[in-house]
Length: 217
Image 1 (tube, rainbow, N blue to C red):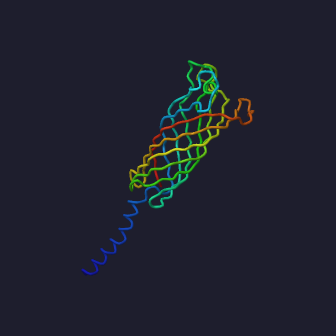
Image 2 (cartoon, rainbow, N blue to C red):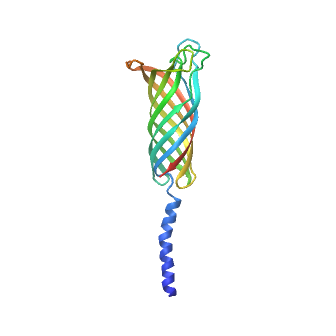
Image 3 (spheres, one colour):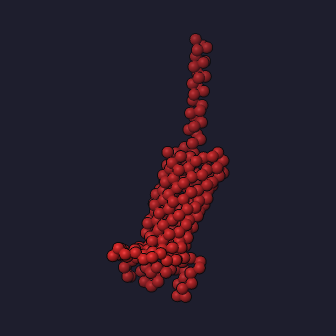
């Protein structure tokens, strides 16, 4: 009887050990979703020179949105793909209805991003990473010296790079702190009557510092 009981306990321990190990170490791999909140700054790029004395104009506000991605843990390194949908409270001030970094009075609209990231595990629970990809955003034109949005907007195409730190809270939840820089170099205008201009060159920079809280499946 003792031998049977000992064998049963050993068999149970052997089955439980891999299961426990799996519970401890599934971080930084698989699909994930997250909520995003942070600081947003959009302004004239470094090569802008329109001789109007306002080349440093910009808009600042609160960035918010959601993201999703899929990561693969390679052991000491992690690679993955990701996408985001964000919006922002940034908009031109009503005190100066004149030219604002080349777009007039505008409000920052929705932003779409798709890209990839790669990082190294600084510790079993901490990932340090870099990222990059494509971004497309809108600048909604405001009506005169008001906060009323019109049906005319600028569509901006560009690229984004960034870096951040992700910390696994447990096997399923994580928190991130990230800086990203976006450069927009092409744009077109969608008018209220449905017509669209041809693409034209621009030089617009965007800086963001964001925090995220997410869930990994």
